[in-house]
Length: 115
Length: 114
Image (tube, rainbow over all chains, first blue to last red):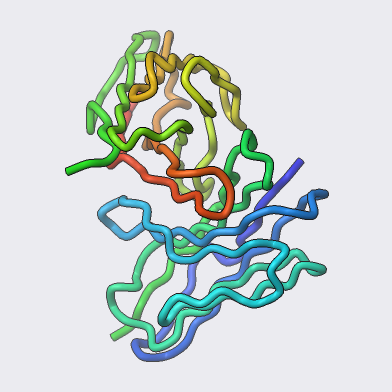
């Protein structure tokens, strides 16, 4: 069975500093997609960044970047220049390439930004 | 605003009562999902529907039923509510399968079963 593991239930970072959130996954598939979603206190889910498994290049979106290590099945999220608005729950998610397969989420990491 | 609309936003039930959570999207998406979110458990998939007329079980389907009434609507029914079903429920729909997939979520339903 495919699983997504986020080993850090909570993390804190000083404003303007850099923080890395960890995510590992287990799958026998070779082609899949990985995502990071953000859930602020409003409960809205927001897509932060996504990665295709067959692409070696790590995805970046402004201050957000990933470190994708396919062999290690690791997909960490780096947030640079942390801002107060980054405080949220962050979920790592996985989906096989097969269009009928569902998206599996990790348990989440709650990120606190310290002013 | 276009998006995913869930009703109700809050609900309190007594054990054994039934209710239906409604979800509608106006983005012409094929895929729709129901998740539950519990502290420390993340988002767990209850049921999903890859297209109109099809539904499939997710990770935690026991105690729930779903109906994909048409392309827009995907409802979740609790036939006999239990305290273990106290949770926040999210409906979602997706733009496209695969890399371009982006889940659009409703605002959630806070359900308490006493």
